[in-house]
Amino acid sequence: MKEYGTVVKLNGEFAQVRIGRNSACASCGKCGMTEKQKFVDFYTKNTLDAKVGDQVELEIHDTNTSKLAFIGYILPLIPALVLMFVALAFLNELWATLLFFVGLVGGFFLVGAIDKAKKRRWMSSPTMTKIINQNKNTNQTEEKQ
Image 1 (cartoon, rainbow, N blue to C red):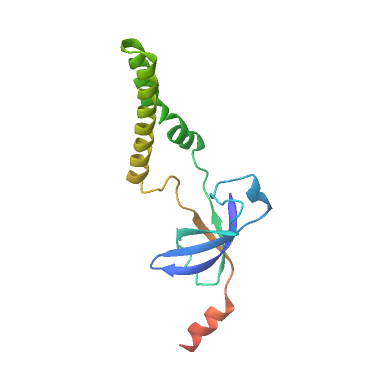
Image 2 (tube, rainbow, N blue to C red; image 1 turned 30 degrees about the vertical axis):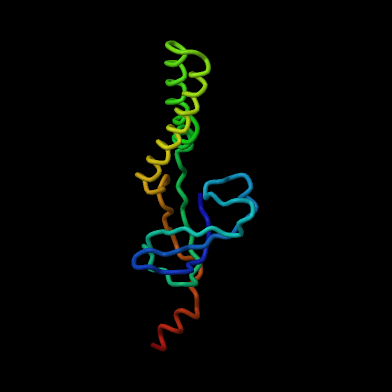
């Protein structure tokens, strides 16, 4: 998916690009923008040597949504169901219910550990594909210096 944004900050070889909300945001959800947010910032490698104020085109790569859904929704249920069925085989329903919730909490801690190990980077970062408009003020400032 292509998006257009403005470079708001440079940090070494990375650029912070701000993308505003548009009409397609309601149905997409790739960027993680909520309904109340007016913009989202992406951090991408500044491969085009863009300057602050430049408008750039970003390619936002598709995430593997089935993998994310499995990790977020199914993975926490696995230890819960295993503990519940073990308790049903050897104990009573009260223990099964209790161990189901213990397993569910353990499953969410497992998801949290995976999230921490991946450093909250579940999708690849966007790629800067081209500079649409260069900020004229930035270029004039550089010429004066």
